[in-house]
Image (cartoon, rainbow, N blue to C red; front, top):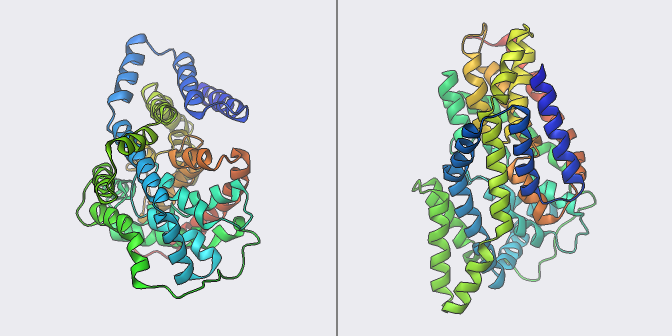
Length: 400
């Protein structure tokens, strides 16, 4: 039970510091230090955790990806590509709400850590003149990026869950489809209030207008078709654009300087170090043992264990890897039971204050975190209710 108290103290400190507007990266670094103290980690263990954070593939991938995302965003913005993309979507979709959510949904097909940051400027461009609050834009960008993670095999979380559970990937995605659909349907209940009607377009959309999407289409094709890592794809697209727009050395240096942000580096290190510290200190593993030791009912374990792990780490792979192996020896584990566990862990990830996409989206729009949570909490509650109802129905009617 002491683990629950320690984790509660840690997250209370995080919330307090974030409410005081401290830089999120430094807040998470401080939280990592607090976890080290509370769990009496040895200097050797701390050094290993720090070294593991710095050399982590996640840290390197995230640094390269977010740096080049910033560079790509600058290139697209300075050359009016973002504006042309937004204008084209207005001409095709017309409905203001559809235009707003189209960019996060499209970018969401890219399984990248912190990928929501890519669609932030696109949502900002589409929202011009609509009078939306920073919290509304942040929620729209954050929420509509994530339905794909429940069903798209490009995301490693659902693939790992399928492998551990021994459930066919197609079946797992099918069970999760109702949850992804629920996310799409409930989003408008908490965002884009007052956004109605259609955009007025002066002229029809021309074929050449779609060329503005070529950088994005090329990037998606590299990742989804050619199986190229996002970071490598971003480097390639940025280099091609620099050549295409004939940037000289001075302008290239300006783009590079804009892409590399010290605050962004601190943010990445803070997020990854906090995740690594929670795991190396034994916090996540100890919590799992507490629930099993006290004979908590099966349904409660399926709900609470993945949720807490997802909430603590903010990573889908983390909650799947730390909790799904514990379910293997439990009685009456069925595909829909694993689907419920996945849904609850995913909801924990969506609500996690260390979820990279949430942190980056909040930073971009300068939104109030509490204001964003006022929208995320009821929306995730509806997704949770659908997952529980589906579990109950399938428990009665499912045929093995």
